[in-house]
Amino acid sequence: MHPAIGIALLLTVLQVSRGQKVTSLTACLADQSLRLDCRYENTTTLPIQYEFSLTRETKKHVLYGTVGVPEHTYRSRTNLTSKHNLKVLFLSAFTTKDEGTYTCELRLSGQPSSVSSQNVSVLRDKLVKCEGISLLAQNTSWLLLLLLSLSLLQATDFISL
Picture 1 (cartoon, one colour):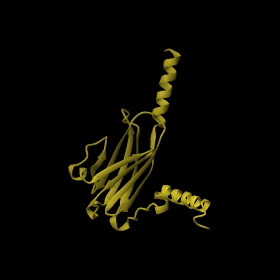
Picture 2 (cartoon, rainbow, N blue to C red; picture 1 turned 90 degrees about the vertical axis):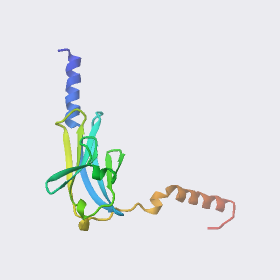
Picture 3 (cartoon, helix red, strand yellow; picture 1 turned 120 degrees about the vertical axis):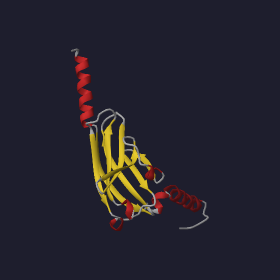
Picture 4 (tube, helix red, strand yellow; picture 1 turned 30 degrees about the horizontal axis):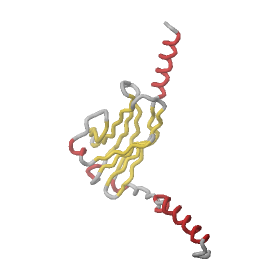
């Protein structure tokens, strides 16, 4: 075997073996929606497939993802946002009928043995409210504009501090 092929094969195996790992799955209540935050590490350039599911009374229900087919009853109630190493699933109109064990599962495309997942048990009465982002953090540009305006007004002797 040519040495370059051997090195390329070794790098591919190492890349797949490190791949991705779900580091945490948390749940909270945002208004009347369940919010699931799936945080993960990704050390590969291979595409990641994902799946959010709910297990209730030993039956698995696929909510959203690229692995299994989401059940019809959940399609209109789910919304996903993705950021760097974070997938956030919202399940609207969350009720006690939606209680159970939620799972976030990641796998590398074309690598069925490279599965990483985390579970979280969700009971409506035990859910914490999602932490809100402070008004100042949301409107940092407005705060900066206000501070710049004050110094400009002070420089023109319009106000005195």
